[in-house]
Length: 346
Ligand SMILES: Cc1cc2nc3c(=O)[nH]c(=O)nc-3n(C[C@H](O)[C@H](O)[C@H](O)COP(=O)(O)OP(=O)(O)OC[C@H]3O[C@@H](n4cnc5c(N)ncnc54)[C@H](O)[C@@H]3O)c2cc1C
Image (cartoon, rainbow, N blue to C red; front, side):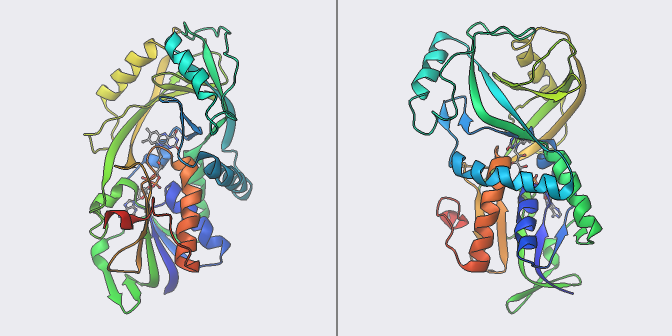
């Protein structure tokens, strides 16, 4: 059977690329083997400001401009609610921290997002000696709900196989590729950290940044904003909160660990002082690139093979933009941004 594209991996990257294909009436088949969990466990937060350093996220405004309508459209198409908007409250740790906030207010790319007034309120159960700074235009995409629904949507159309894509079964025939019963002119690999098993692209500098999260039930914590300190506390409703996330650069598994849980508990003690119960723990590997830019483009030898990866810690904001860029490059010859093109690693 002939299809225009094969997509390998249905996380945020694969999903965003499928949307491009559908809107252009292209035919495709998706392979998904559940080997990676990043898009399923992600906090899903979008925030245009890096609160550790008070700097803007790379291309944040442009990415949000594309991402928010993208998720809104998917809410409608899949009949789900996935975008929860809220204020993020940065917990200041010192006077110096507050001063850095005031300095950041003058940065042109940040003014629209940061509240000038400090929030001096007290929130029961929240530990904050130096007040809060409010970040506007932040929120959360329920990425698990989105990915699960999207997979069901593709399943209904019979265009997804829940099996491992085996790279060694590719054969090249002129400008086409044969894979099992399919003939296609392009394969787009959206494998996240699974790229390490891809013989065509595993030379690219993708690092593992394992992250773990816990979900807690805390009936006495009554907040409806995202609390950001050394970790985030994200309200899910029904007294449930997602707490995370850790960074581990050595562990290459997606398994939740005791070590990850202990780290989160220790940090959480400094942020809230109400009783809670841990009701869930999840882990995944963020596909992070050494220069913190996505990996998109075409293989230097096999022009039928393409990649959409390297979404790092901000897949929610970046995925719709880079999927469009790759699509426009492949279909309309629009040049890729040199910052994201994999040619930078040739
Ligand atoms: C703990 C944690 C918290 C996070 N929090 C946030 C956050 O708050 N906000 C945010 O924007 N981002 C967050 N992220 C990052 C975000 O999850 C990633 O940027 C994004 O999900 C990456 O999407 P992806 O599609 O590139 O990769 P993945 O989600 O890893 O998807 C790749 C898919 O490819 C499949 N696959 C791989 N190899 C094969 C194969 N050979 N055959 C078939 N299928 C294959 C995998 O099973 C997987 O489903 C977080 C990540 C983690 C781990």
